[in-house]
Amino acid sequence: MPRSTTQRRPNFERTGVRIGVRIAALPESSAPDATSQLRLLVHRFAPEADYLVLQLPDPVLDGTPGNAPLKAALPALLDSVAAAAAEWRRPLLFCVPPDLPPADLDALLDAVEAAELAGVLVGGGAADAQGTRRVGAPTRDASLATVHHIAERWRERRGRLTLIGSGGILAPGAALAMLQAGADLVQLHSGLVYSGPGLPKRINEALQRQADDRKAEADEVLPASVAAAALAPTWLGFVLLGLSMVIAGTAAWVVAATVVVLPYDLSFLGLDRDAVAAIHPAMLPFMRHDRTSLAGTMISIGVLYTALSWFGVRRGVHWARRALIASALPGFASFFLFLAHGYFDPLHAVLSLLLLAMFLVGLRWPAAGPPEVPVPDLVDDRAYRLNLVGQLMAVFLAAGLIVGGVSIAIVGSTRVFVPSDLAFIGRSAADLAAANPQLLPLIAHDRAGFGGALFADGIAMLTIALWGFRRGARWVWWAIALSGLPGLAAGIGVHATVGYLDFWHLSPAILALLLYILTLVLSGSYLGALSRPSVQR
Image 1 (cartoon, rainbow, N blue to C red):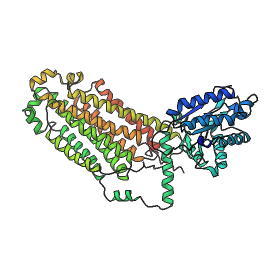
Image 2 (image 1 turned 90 degrees about the vertical axis):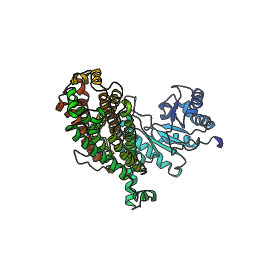
Image 3 (image 1 turned 180 degrees about the vertical axis):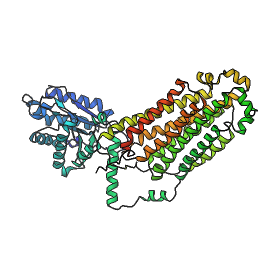
Image 4 (image 1 turned 90 degrees about the horizontal axis):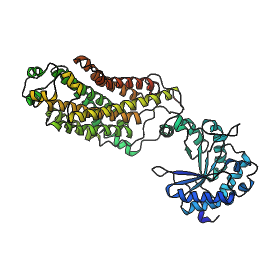
């Protein structure tokens, strides 16, 4: 093979997604036909791929009678296909079945080395007693043995030839075993089905935990950038943001439970409290219902922000910072919804400016570190399988909060009421506007504010559900538990207090309560809140 067609090692260390394409000839093709087909596939897929993997039918490789011609032509075939890949400067690897007899495996590796391919991928399944091929967990042992054999053979060639292991990687422990056997990389297939789409994240975190343990054993010091950041704890801005939200929400709840309306509200209406109550007996209870719901949501947000700041941002965890920012930005932007009907809330404006200042201080904290891994997550045990369902319930809960927040914000900024609201009040929107032209803008301000806060709460919950569920992350469980209590207690309890018990109006809150309970129950053992997590080494 001319040196100009020598395969280069794939650059898998670049950032971004690497795209690999596995190509194969039609079964029972002759050697010339197989070569022609494979070269055609190289030219078709090379423009879209970062690397190519060549796979041949198993009978060609394992010595089945009738395939000798194609097997004999394998070196020439590899040379020709490798030359086509080299024209596009694409690395070409060969797919090696995990169940080849040692003699056939070594002969195949001789051909791969002679053609100077970029490496091999161990995969494609293993034959069973019925002659069919099985993939996944049944091939794990054979795949590990094959990877180990190739790694030992290529011990002196590491760095020039790439070895990718696959087969039966259903949990992080299996991926670590494959890497320990000598694979440079692992490839996932059925594990994404049986263990869920979070498997790559769990593998990376197990590797990170291993690296952290090695650093601890070597007694390494923190990088200078992290040490310098520790001297300037601007993350306190985020902590104060969360605590201030809790305090402000508690104060708003007290107001809603007592006087309901504040002096500047009455000044805007040009009425006293008794005159507002005289419009209709249900008027103040309805406003209490809105304002209590907003107060509970504010406390919920504050609890999540405080937990994210203290347990995440303070420790340099980048996902926690992203989660907080993703939630806070639309929360601050929702302030402008209050102006949709022309009511400016001075107290809310001052509070928003103070919270924004704390947020801006917190933004200076880099939080560029990896996620914390409390316990290496190596196995798919019962706790993990239950947690998959619990995590899905958390995603559904967050999605419901987001959809509900958007819906309430839109209604509050446009027509203000839904039919069940007017049925509870016992007056039409036109009647209320006729009674006092400023009444609808005041109520719209409450509703739009509640919708914006609910949306921000949903974003915080969604990011925690997607990024924060890790074995032993007890603080995540407690953050969800403690944030959900005030939000649900306010949203459901106030309806019972004021007598607003329309079933369809309450059904989203009841569904949220059910999802909240399922999330906590199903994820409790995995997150370490309902049982003592076992350390998996």
